[in-house]
Image (tube, rainbow, N blue to C red; front, side, top):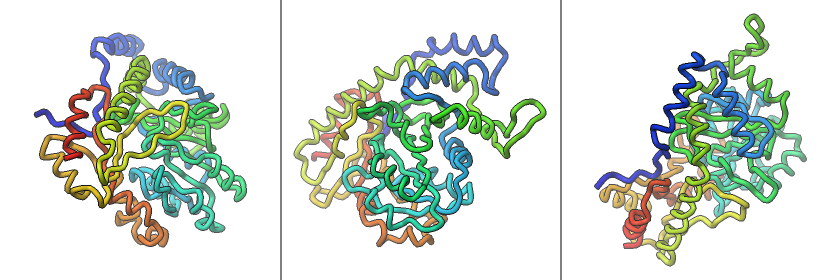
Length: 366
């Protein structure tokens, strides 16, 4: 059978993309914040319900730049349970990551563990909305306010997620999105920083374009983080289909939960109480009560053409460049280690038929 991967990009019909490419060819502008780039930024701001969006070539460059924009130094408290780009962006800025354990129910940074990790060198907190499930933003912000810390959210998974008051991206000093091809919303490669005001966006725009203000004026040691016109055009096209894609993901999420209900040793993460989720991933926790362990199930699925993913395993804190940090010691991160040893993300994407969802669930059940 054709392999079933944990996620696949949602691709609208090719013929819908041709007019966008024609506009780019006609304009002769391929990059440098051209008309497609500007139109996409505006369309994203309106769709997401935020004031300002600064587009980037990818989410990692956006994280690196966001840290620069906030002038963060010293130590930053973050989660070990994430993609490596979260911590790598800190090292690229000469910042020391301080890992704090996660909540067993949400798998997000546990606010109850943050204060004990704060030192005189701590300048910020970098939580991750893991799998698109919102962090406890109120508790995190209260700690940040008490200790005069910045908050930068790695919101790579959280496109379109809303709480009772609006976009989850409005929390913290900045939020960073990823538009990588495996994400709920993608532009082949891409990312964005959600900015609270025009002044911050202007600084970020300078930083992502070598620090240029005009042809002869450079005001900051910026990098080349700009999104191309082709990526922006694809983003504009994707916006037309995103609501349909999110609705389909919700159907698949519901089907998995129905098919897996009552399976011994299998725990689905609880649905978070949000106004709108994005169903970015479908992780299950394979506990000791299941017939086989997580790795055994992982290989069993692969034998049947189902390419699930142990996401996130290993923990960031286990990689060579981090394992020597005091905060990376296993005894400090018991919940994160247990989650990493049990998690398995099952395939979820709009084109996945419910029949295949049932087939995948049957492999887990039996």
